[in-house]
Image (cartoon, rainbow, N blue to C red; front, side, top):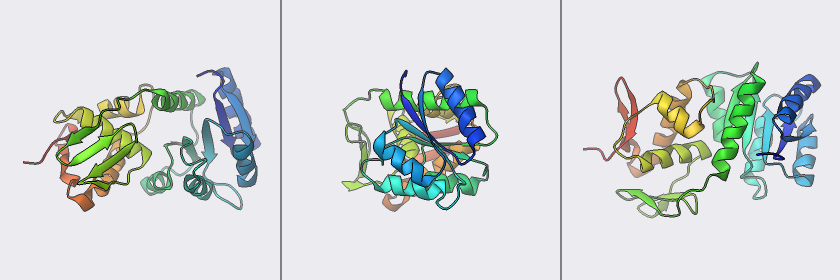
Length: 230
């Protein structure tokens, strides 16, 4: 992971300095921006491998900037971690809807942030099988990173895709929230287990138009699994 470039976007110089020091100690290369304009210039001039994006910025917010990037073919796949003081579930959902790969609430541990960044880079770099995975008429094509049901595309966010991929590779097996966090988010990433519930709801909502929402089953007192409903 050495020499990976991380763009730090935050209007507070002290936070940028703290993040730069922590990331450089972890052997990442850093570029900085204090607002949306500088961030846009940086992302065009020196396409980063990952962006740390502050939610609250003057003029153009981080969430609006993220939406713009996700609409642009050149930037839509860049991993983005939102830095936010907003810890409420509604804010989390809004960030995920805009296309964030992860979020971390201020104040946060630089060590935890570095662990999350490394987890995302491992995910991006990991090689996945090109063979389609299916359950009934749901088909996941890892080579195209696409999911279809009865031939129709299913719209999924990046985290919901990874969660569904894990479920499809382990059909009929129940997992605790902790196991899902470790397998989908990675070890040493410390986030509230309620994050799993948010993503499960989002995954079910994406499957609902096709009548597949009940394939993601709650195992009472334990966790979740994916299986064909009886």
